Length: 185
Ligand code: FES
Image (cartoon, rainbow, N blue to C red; front, side, top):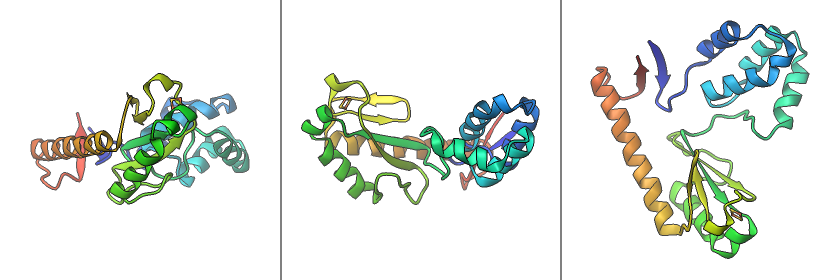
């Protein structure tokens, strides 16, 4: 049984095991390794990068160079739910600045930051390519079009409630009423 944290990610040691068991350590596996670890942990901690450097026999500076070059990679933890507010032109003229400001006030975070409970990370994006639906807000892989501040706030609270229910249910089912750890079978 694999232990997941409250956000659904595995721990660093397990991620290092993944690197060892799923990859041969060839230098051309660098990007897939980084993606695998990030998907498993949620970001790329320094220890994981050093392990990847050891596994691939590539200089650590090269690994850090790749990670900082590609926008897809994160060096800091993110929330379980990444809220992306489109700040492209179509969304801007449809009120995305107000939505963004309202989310910032509601969650008490600025773009690039994660809420204290680790649940939400707020980001902005230049354009999602769904301009007909402006203003657009994306939560993880789900796209929400024609949004306004009220709808966005409701969406956030719905997510918070659903997440709380999932954690509570998992805790009760697995005998951990604190809900701090979720176990997948
Ligand atoms: S400007 Fe927002 S989706 Fe294109």
